[in-house]
Length: 494
Ligand code: SIN
Image 1 (tube, helix red, strand yellow):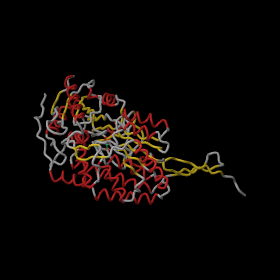
Image 2 (cartoon, rainbow, N blue to C red; image 1 turned 90 degrees about the horizontal axis):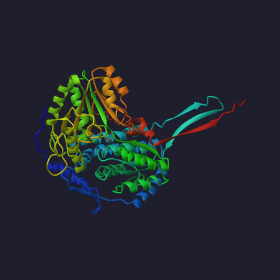
Image 3 (spheres, rainbow, N blue to C red; image 1 turned 180 degrees about the vertical axis):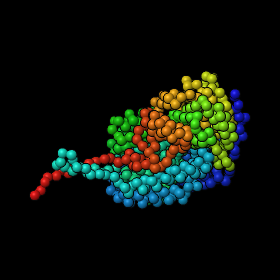
Image 4 (cartoon, protein in one colour; image 1 turned 120 degrees about the vertical axis):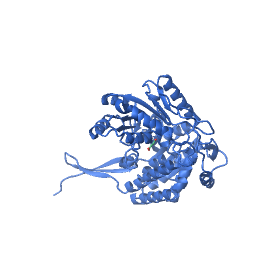
């Protein structure tokens, strides 16, 4: 059966909320000329930012390097106090930050508020971690020496962040970097730089030294990376973005043998077994699919549903998707905002067309929505052939692509048939099955009966070509530390 939703009417923005965001932008002392920042729900220019050239980026490196040497000598308690103050400031200004996120990125206000809390959680977590510096003591097994290990700051860190979670991806990198005693150069996506600029400004007011953290907004991404990652004062790069760009950065990082953390592409499989609780599975799938409009590395990409539950699951999911309120993130009750740009809209249309041409059944949505801004309907494709492009690419949009399976072994084999391995999901009421499947999924993260596993206290990251290193948790701090050991000679005395 093919049932597509009629062309949706978009929910309009509440003008007072737009005005709130614009008042914040007006206070940010942005330049008159430079790069345009647009609202993806209208395509309208909302701000202008400085387009830093390579010399400017290298100047920031020089200043941050000097500041980092002084910061490395501060005590863990001093660093923690600054981070606690930053956390308080982010929470105090949460509403303003959330409005800014909506204005430049487009997600619904409720999700933007959740992002602010998620982002602030990283700051609080690393304020708490900062005062528990790890190290240990061992006896050399053969005698004659004692081994003491300690951590020191890894060195000047370059942090390259994406547009999809403009605040959380910034704090997830900045907070552990400075908690461990490092300076940082932050390069936010030029599509969504405003939230990072405001967050770092608040950090300064909370006590982060002005010279320690620099936000470099630039349209010259390649020239920036080539210059700063080759600068001998830089010791670390952390990147969140696509696997192809990650590969390029890793090649550059190899020249100076930089420490690297890479949070790269995802192609998350979501497995629903016959014994799943239907309502829980549908809710979890909606959350894993529609969070951030599907524009998340951990978004459910390939939804595999077992034959016995598939019809009921698809029916329920189609009904929920067809009822989703689409519109401005500032609109009342909106659940799905715009896509980030027109290229994303064209990509959704092309993926849908290709899947349908190969035999997928379009159950709801399937089209761009007309109007200013970048819109695509919440969409459900059933019986997606595994050779269609949508089954092999990171979708990054609001299309639920369902494939069916009969046995557990088959589902696991198909789920793992990709070079990527960031997140996976399993829905079942059997604890044994949940743990068995989780053990066999080749992903760094597994959500069991839930669609949003992200948590500041957890080590977020992938395996295979989805990256290396972890963000969040105690592991996230280690990414910004070097382990050193002192070998202390021991000789018996009389
Ligand atoms: C991402 O999409 O890159 C991050 C999502 C998350 O932290 O939950």
